[in-house]
Image (tube, rainbow, N blue to C red; front, side, top):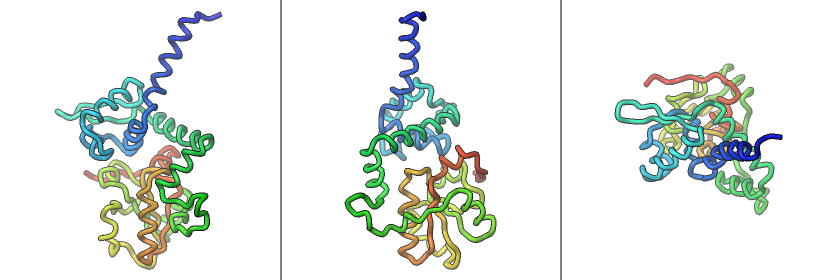
Length: 231
């Protein structure tokens, strides 16, 4: 029989990962870091947090082994400790979606999807395509692939051939997209609202638009090709 105190110590060490995940704010920071390394200031701005609060959450994530920091001059840039951390985040979402109805309802409200209260509501963001179809149609020149994430995330890695128009600029830059070719928008991941809003806007303005079924997180986890833009 094993030593009870040794087992307890082992499980307590394992629980450090659970503690690091036990905050919606820290989950958001991990989500942002799936797109590429970020400074504390960048993360704070993207998450709408103060610098001190962001630093404290990053230290908890670091103690849980989920992130690491690299010094660049006077700036520390944080990144995920490995692709397995991104896979863990995706797994947490998948488990919660299957077993927690409240999570599904909260997700649908956030994404603006039809709910049980209005299941018949027409929503153009329901129109989606998978990764294989996107690659096939992009290679055939049948679609424009539109990346609506912030430009820094696009530069860190994007779907090959994708056009970068951040979501907050899209309404003013629609004339940059052809009228006679379908547009497929994508953003950070399956729970990213930016691509949903982009498809709604594009459809309202007369474009044939679709949404990638998930986003850059799942694209990377599936080991699909990624381009990095010149700085």
